[in-house]
Length: 443
Image (cartoon, rainbow, N blue to C red; front, side, top):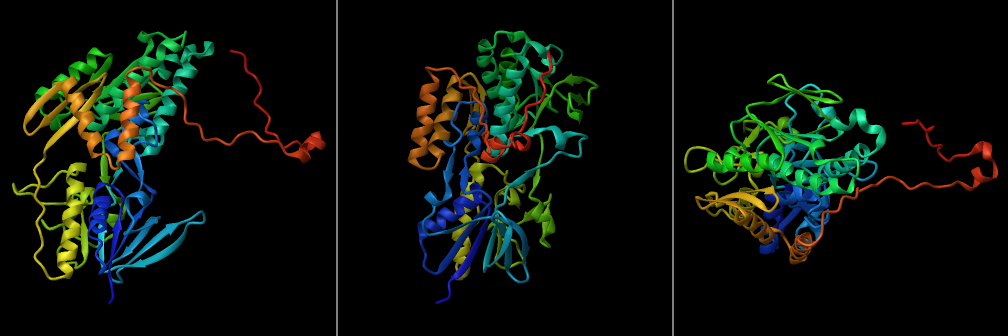
C-alpha cells in the first residue's frame, strides 16, 4: 500500500514536536521526514546561559537522530517549495548540491529570522542572540574585549571596549543583558588593569518598562534589579544607527561602544515571501486546525503561522505554544487522511518566566506573580523539566550545581586552524610557506 508522505520543514519546537508525535504513533501508513539545517534541536530558553558561561555549549542541544528513530531526518537547507508539483528542493553537502523530495502533506515550521529594520550599519556590525553560533560569538566577543581592554596600550579604546549595548527589553534582551553583566563583573577581578567602574552595560528599550509581556509590576521590578546591578537602562529609546565605534540613539545620545547585541526585531522566514499562499503579517494564515485553507495538504505552525484563538486574536509564537501545536498538527494530518474530524488547537498560556541574573527572576504562572529568588528557582526547575532527554537534564543540573561553588569560566571557543610547517619550505628558506607574523608595533 502506498504510504502518505509528510515533509516537516524546520527542526524547532513546532517541527520537532510534530515529528515526535508521528514517532510516538509509529503509523506504518505514513512516511514522515523532518528537514532541518542543523542536526540538533536547540533549547532556546537556555541560550543566554551559554553566552554567559553558565552552561556548556553542548548541554542545551540534542542530536535529532537520538530523538527520532522511526521518522526520517534530512540535514539541508530548503531552497524552494513547488506547491503545484508538491515538491521541495533542498541543498546540502559541501558542494551544496540539491535534492527534490515529493510530498502529500507539507508542514511549515521554519521559525523566524532576525529583522534589522533597515537601521544604518546594524546588519554589518550587530551581534545576535538567536542561534547556538550567536551565543558562542557573543561569549567570545565579551572575553576578547576584556583581554584587549586589560592591556597597557588600550587606554584610548578602553571605554568603547568595556561598553556593551543590548537593544530590546523583551525576554531575549533582558535575559541576555542580565547574564552577560554577571559574567563580565565576575571576570573583572582577574584583570589587574580593569576596575568595576570602567564597565558600562546599557539596555536600550522603546517602552516605559522592560518585559511588557509580564505587566508593569514585574517589568518595573526587573528594571529596578538590573539598575541596582549596574545596568544602565535607556527607556523610550531606540537604536537609530551604528558606526564602527558608536551606537546612535533616537534621543540624540551617542554611546561609544564596539559591541551592540540586537534582540529587538524578528520577521517571518524569507521563504514564506516566495509562496503564493494566504498571509497575514507576513505569516501563513491558517485555520484553528493549523491547515492553510484552500490548499490541501499544506499546514503551518509556530513562527510561520497566524493561528486564531478563542478571543478573536492570535496565539503568540512562543515555545510552549509551538510544542503543543506540533502534537495537534500531527493528529490532524492523520485525521485528514482518514477522513476523520480535525481537532482545533486550543491552549491557554500557563505562564511566562525570565531570569535577570544573580539568582533572580520574574514570573507569572497561572495569573500569579513571582519575583526574586523563587521566580529564578521556578525558571530553572520548569525549563529543566522541559529540556528533552534525561542525559541533557543531568548535564545541565550538574553545571548549575558546580556554578554554586566555582566562578564562571571565561575561556574563548576558538576554532581557527593550528599552525603547520611544510617540509619543503624547511629545505628551501626562500620558499617558506609559513605565514609571517605582523611587525611589532610599540604601545
